[in-house]
Length: 120
Image (cartoon, rainbow, N blue to C red; front, side):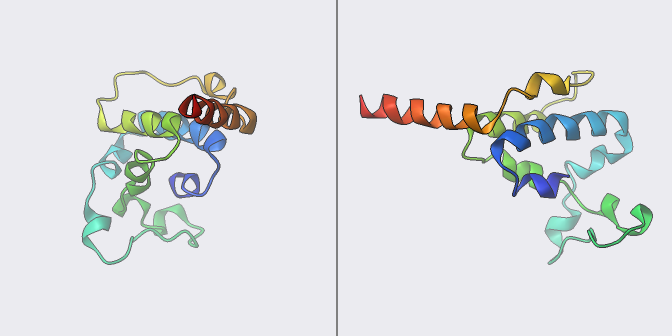
């Protein structure tokens, strides 16, 4: 899911980030993936997306480096949301319905407004 968010449009990524947060809250043993440097230290990420068996995919040996990448996203809402992973997980869970109002139209309006303000 995190890897897909790198190529997803901002409207989708805004929903994926809180979904990943909720998954990590539900499965605390996966929290180690956030701060893991195992995949970074190796030349290649040990996770195999092609493996059908989750136990054999080596996902737990990987890291969620994609989340760190999203914290540098060009769309401010995405980068701000991604930064929640660098803080303590105090929120019980996110209500995903709160993020459904992000669409292509709202993203485009945001950019047009920003461009309009910079021209004034």
